[in-house]
Length: 256
Image (cartoon, rainbow, N blue to C red; front, side, top):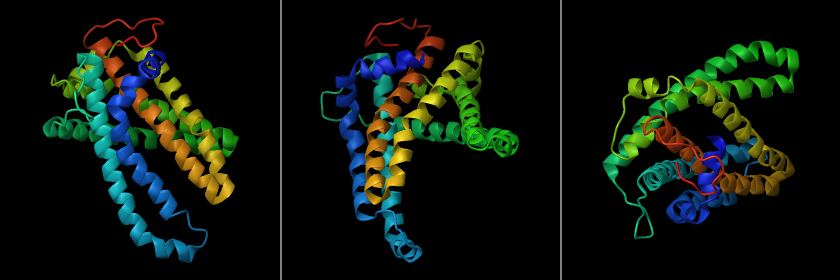
């Protein structure tokens, strides 16, 4: 499922850019400007002086990011599942649909975050003192995997909202009850991929202000791929477990 979701994005990258590119720039450009205008301070007094203005700009950027993500996610679900495209430069803006999608995304995110915290705390108490940096990696990986397993079990709710065929938490959980094996593999692979793709940004952050800016640039570029692959995973889960669609073995650009 993970490989298929990656193919949905990379195998159809022109349509992916056409649907999401302009909306992603609405978030990415302010983020770059924020990094340029308010670089990471090197002294505590600089941090205090910049805190007020940068916090306001960061909040505005966060709002733009949320709106852009929800808008892109709904449009991408509808493109993959309904073959819906927009004649204009931007996908259709349906405020009630986007609000429902955003609200349920927040709910699932909170459930995943609570689970991530609990699992990481339990494993980290033992693994980190014994294994050090390796223990941190194992703790992070298993915490992410646990959160993703539950998140993926409930994930069909979101594409269902996007195509106006809503599901309850119980219906989504029931529909994926026989999917534990594939979802565990999917969660582990997704967690590893999320960590690995961020390693260059972590390394760049150690190279001073220029490195921090390059890390931001890397994060924004890879963020587009991670976002659409993540949305494609949700779409694939819905298409396979709710609609009963087969997952093509190796067809570049094949849809769910």
